[in-house]
Image (cartoon, rainbow, N blue to C red; front, top):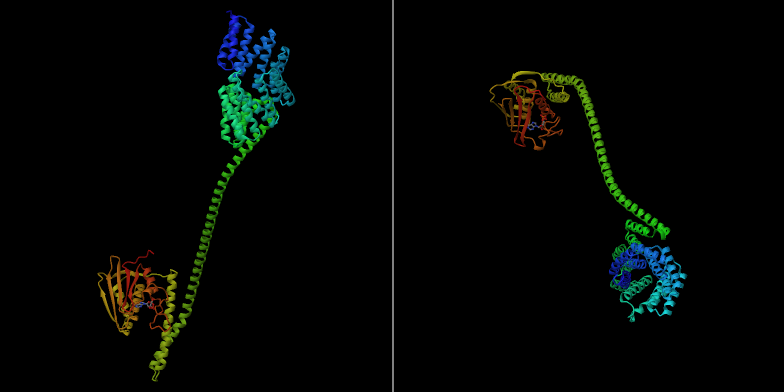
Length: 638
Ligand code: ADP
């Protein structure tokens, strides 16, 4: 066997098995081509290149297929072999169509019709017209497309080529579908499907299966378009099963995309995405730009419906890239729309986010505002209160000062202005009383009245003197005369001064003195007045009882002078008031006891002035005990 014979034989073998054992055929054709090239066997080389291109086209390697088909065509053109030029031009048309170069695909296919006519081969002419009609349909030229397919069908029919006739009927269905005549489309597709129910022993199994898959998927597409999605899915799934049997990735890719699109229509977005993703994978594998662009377009729509405008834009851009030259303007518009949608969506989302944040901030700001307002109001009130309090205090203090000043003025004036006439009243009433007593007439009636005048005068004088003393105390205007004296003697003098009272109220007075030393340094007059007042009260509020004076050393600092009586006692609720000026437990006009209620007030203030204190303990009806704590040495630190 010569080399050329061997090459022819190998090429023939590859040609026979390229449909069913594509990879094996490719292996053979590649090896054969090298061999043919080596021996400058052009026909052999061109044929090998043609088989290689076809196998590569079948396996999806369209770019390599294109290179090899072109090389093959050039050689056949050089050799002017019309039959092969027809075959390779037909293949080139298919490849160009698959890669999306429609003008070149159309040109190649038109050429095939010419070559067939040159060859006077009606079967090839039919095939060429069939392919041409598909390309016309693709370009939207319905009349030309239908004209060519009808010619193809009648040519096949005339030749008795039932399989190819059926394929053309299927193509007719596709063309009707492309131009929107769904009834005619389904009618023809169902006729085409019918063909597979009859036995076709003369046709190769894989070719039959491939065509069956194509018809089924066509029906799927038609029913999908007819909005009969369930029917569509049934046909498409049958088509997918057939295509899997044929191992044709081209068909599988298209069917997967179709199923994806039906689910998209049904708004089953996840399912749709699943099928389309698979289709994209296969499109990439077989280098089908058409497949990719269709899938990208559908995926973009899915994402758009999902509201993921960014991914939608992303896929639309992919789609645009694949079909830029064909649908430029339309895509531009779609892209712009999506771009706008995506931007609007992003802006909206951002705006929503900002609004949320803003609202939260606003809430916080409002809260703070309220808090600040509340606190400000509180502060304002507090300030106002404080201010008004201060103002009130200042006013009160001023008033008090003013009142005190006025009071002192009044008291001073009164005491001076009153004391002189009062002294005159008392003095003259004394004289009158003496004169009346000395009179030989019975003047007892007058003496009693004159004595009343004298008594009232003295009471009034006492009140005036008290008021003067209290006023001086309030003004801190009391001068102390400090000497060292014998306290026991002072108590003795005091007792003397109230002895008369003590006797007239029939009280028994006793004195206990346990002082180790009677020496005291203080204001003797004040000390004497304190003790006299206490003794006078004891005498006044005790009748037929006992008054006990107890002088003792309380500690190193103090002498304790206790005056204990068995008198009427003081109600507990009045104990805290008896040291107030002008306070008397019995304050009615018809009271039984003399006095003007200032003895204790003045006494306790005098005690305070010399660093001492007067304490009281009393039981109503039983008696009272007044304790005067006298510092041995005056304490003047207050
Ligand atoms: P007065 O001039 O009324 O005695 P004081 O200031 O000395 O004024 O006493 C105030 C009041 O305290 C008296 O009016 C009296 O009601 C009560 N009081 C003072 N000492 C005694 C006492 N020893 N027993 C009962 N009541 C007393």
